Image (cartoon, rainbow, N blue to C red):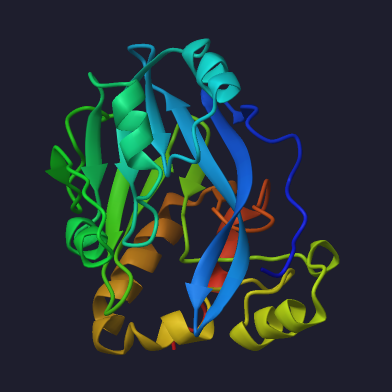
Length: 249
């Protein structure tokens, strides 16, 4: 597998706003055209008014990470936000059997197609789940390959994406081949976007995509968290307009 530097320290909740943390995780290998491509991972934690935790895109669970998460509150909601990010959920379900699990449409079908068994309590939609109603907003982005639930946390003015923007930093990529591929895909910082091949799968979904992007922009987030690469700790709305210009044409 090609190599890439991570966002150390790993498995440590890092506060990014009021009642919200990111946790950078290990590199995973994503199979693509016979290659194993390295993706640094990142999950997001939101502490709700009840003190319970909303865990977005759970990363690999270690003993140390579990202890740090438990110190923040009770894990109540596990989120598989799109049809790629679900593999970490089962071990969190085993560790937190009382937590409820939510997934984007198509996750269970995708998991079954690769021989993975995972169950969820509910499938995400445009309407907000009662577990976080009044505290987190959401909108679904539906595509031919990727369907992703996008979340907005008004208290910290933070938007949470997963793969709809990828923003790899060239200096962290050790392989010239992988660096070249990222540039070709169009996902290199400072102009990170959804990879070009993924964009093509939204060809029949442009109207709903534009509606969702307009909702994200209307929320006017200051921060935009993404799963892979450098996230945006300021100027978030401008970054959204830049990164989704391909969708608004």
